[in-house]
Amino acid sequence: MNKTRNIVILTGAGISAESGIATFRGPGGLWEGHRVEDVCTPEALAADATLVHRFYDARRAALDDVAPNAAHVALGGLDAAWSGELLIVTQNVDDLHERAGARRMLHMHGELRSALCELCGIRTAWAGPLPPYTPCPDCGENALRPDIVFFGEMPYQMDRIEQALGRADLFVSIGTSGAVYPAAGFVQLAARYGARTLELNLERSAGSDWFDETRLGPASVLVPAWVE
Ligand code: BJW
Image 1 (cartoon, helix red, strand yellow):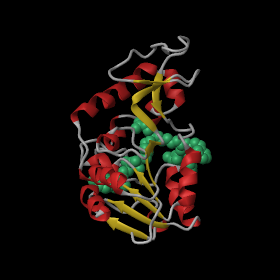
Image 2 (cartoon, rainbow, N blue to C red):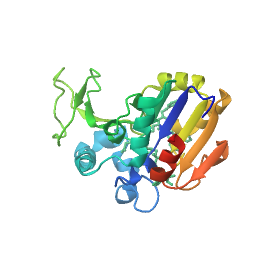
Image 3 (cartoon, rainbow, N blue to C red):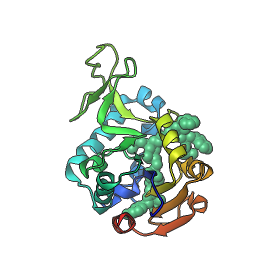
Image 4 (spheres, helix red, strand yellow):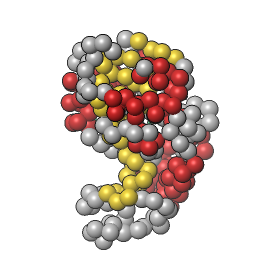
């Protein structure tokens, strides 16, 4: 990383897999027991809020039983030590990056521990299960929803991400299948802006051909080795 100053890191479900959080796609994937269109769209929330809340309540509760792994810890250490620009963009809705010390980061697909009022835009910390029609504590009018970016909704902080990609001289993608846009397109954007691109993943992904380099293996091994 000799001449590298500005780094953007994209993480996906694969970085949390060794902490015991199921990935989305593939064997044992989170969605094997649920049809994605049943839980992860605005239409599903409108049609059956109870089902959608139950799905996210279970995932939020599961956060208490997991801990960051060596890959999260390595990125937390990099954040503390790196004097150049750094932005960790996670697609994950868990809080394992924060718990491993990452600060220069954002959740582009939302957070399990946050509830959103779509009417007034207020976010509220969300600890335990909430009945599906709990009104917003601020406006009192609208029901709180999981602060999760569903299919068809705009991921968060796209401007900030695109600006960081424009300044990056290194883009690193960790543990993501490259199946979901716009995150899957970040590698091409970064490359167009002149960044070197590196993929760390268990297996080749849909986007592997776009990277300058792909290293295959578990994140808990590859990420600490890369950060060193
Ligand atoms: C390991 C490992 C280990 C395992 N070590 N690695 C047609 C073409 C293009 C786009 C579209 C299209 N039709 C519709 C769209 C848009 C749509 C989309 O991309 N759909 C695709 C399915 C085609 N996207 C959207 O709707 C997004 N919004 C949008 O596009 O708005 C308009 C817009 C326009 C212009 C600019 C900007 C925006 C919103 C997407 C929201 C995604 N939400 C979810 C759910 C979040 C909540 C929840 O958790 O329930 O986000 S979907 C789900 O997929 C989740 C993830 O963040 C996301 C990505 O998954 P990820 O992280 O890659 O996980 P996996 O399981 O797929 O892969 C894990 C990888 O790890 C694998 O490769 C393993 O090998 C690896 N791995 N163990 C290292 N130990």
